[in-house]
Image (tube, rainbow, N blue to C red; front, side, top):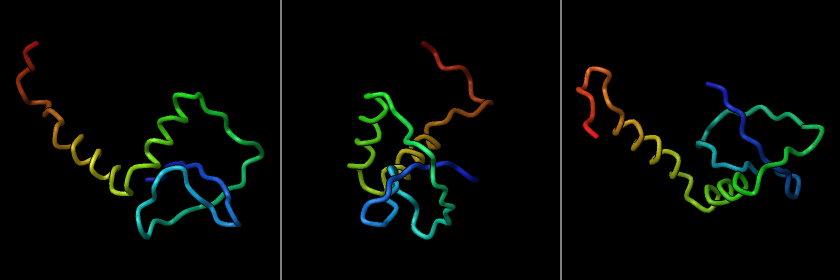
Length: 77
């Protein structure tokens, strides 16, 4: 599955704004201009950057574990 992950060049090295899985294949494209984010979006990106590289794996696993089967009875409110 292809996904877009933005990054910046620091000291000649591409630094992604989100952690990448070890051994991931990447395709680099140079953008004409910087994409602007809202302060809320940038704060979220910054928070993810402060987390460990395993944080996304943990969130995805917890999300999968909490998914409700389409055959489950409706949740009572």
